[in-house]
Image (tube, rainbow, N blue to C red; front, top):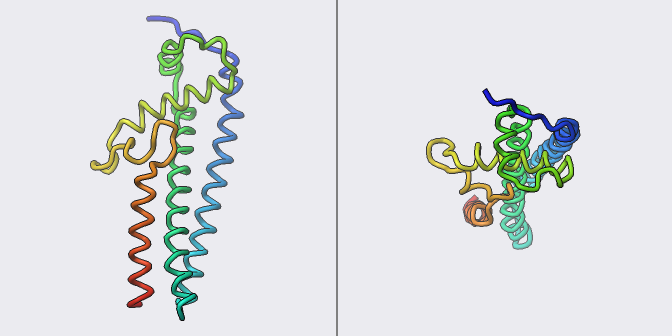
Length: 167
């Protein structure tokens, strides 16, 4: 069996990077909750008159799209955290060997590279709910796809328009 060499700088940087990912998870969760409250406020105001209806029709899709964006970022940071929490030295060694300049990069950059590589190999390439591939949802930089956000925005615009006209 091959002996795997540990990288001490990498090992020391794991905890602070995991703390950063945890802070991002909390931030995006708080954003989702606060924007969801905003949607309830918009719905409870009942759009009346032209200005109220216009504010509802434009405000609701914006809020829904931003909630979707924050939800997808929440998903991405959760997956990056998973790479640290469920990773192992064998996976680390495989990822490290693919990068020629591993020893020249900063410790936090090493952890970031490892987490992103793990994310790309583990989550993004697989199908979720047996229908959606991760790459259709998030790009290689763990950012939500614009097409998906536009689709969500247009669908929520249509629903809010129907609600304002017939509701």
